[in-house]
Picture 1 (spheres, helix red, strand yellow):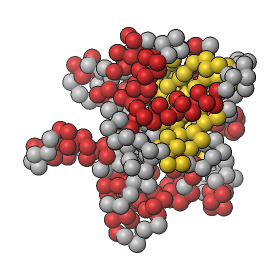
Picture 2: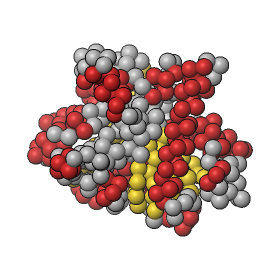
Picture 3: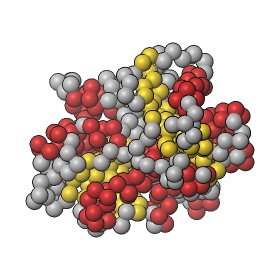
Picture 4: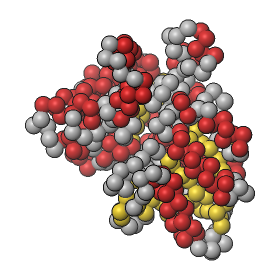
Length: 393
């Protein structure tokens, strides 16, 4: 690695930080990182650190500033890994760019201040990415940094998909449907035609199913509709987030049950979804082992039902469906959830190959299926690295 130029990608979430180093010595970065890993469970007593080819190890973090300590640990490990290589730039996944930022942008003090003003739009993720940016700006002000936005991919949605049925003044105040998981969907817009050819250029629904979850309807590889809207609470039921909810229920919680705004926000972001309905866990893997419990069965049934319902909605927007693509942690690794979703989509022409699904094959539909159903691992870090390399190196 001596003499190489490397680009670091930081993908900061609410309780984890993924990182990856890409070689940009000879132009655009290859899809495979030189080295990658993750600090996980940062806000819990069971934090871990893992890296390429190594098992996860416990990560001791202070209770008062665990996120800052995790960033410091990653920075130290990256410095060790560099050896004789040069760190050329850093790219960050930033969830929200508001109405101002869609394309990747080099971050300076002015841009950072703008991005901080969008924290209320994405309180679960935005602060942590900005903490990483601010720390590096202070420590290495000469090091170029780029912010790559999760909302950017969805700017191709038609105006009618972006609008909310609120008073006209709300649009001027930035209240609109933005959509998220854009780096993941952008990767699929590259990977799917590479693997499946022109079939991916038709009416495609991508299902990003992880602890956060959403669907994106794509036509000719561009976003035309998505289930997340103004915030990352909207759309599908998730691990701890509620998904789409009658606003009257929120009014009831505050007006009749007298819950504070802060308490309701905590409930909707952290205590709902699979965890809230099951009373056990936000993880489908755990829930599938406890289906003898009626609450767990309810949670899994509702989770799958909401996915199927939204697939039908997006298929209506597309005027039909040619491809369904599963990605992210649950989408890539949970054949039981994929199978249950597909079992309810026969009306669209989905016919599942049970053996291929169990094996996690790239194509899990039968040759007779009118809809091609595929599994495609996402690679948000490479998308951010590619964008930052164009911008900064």
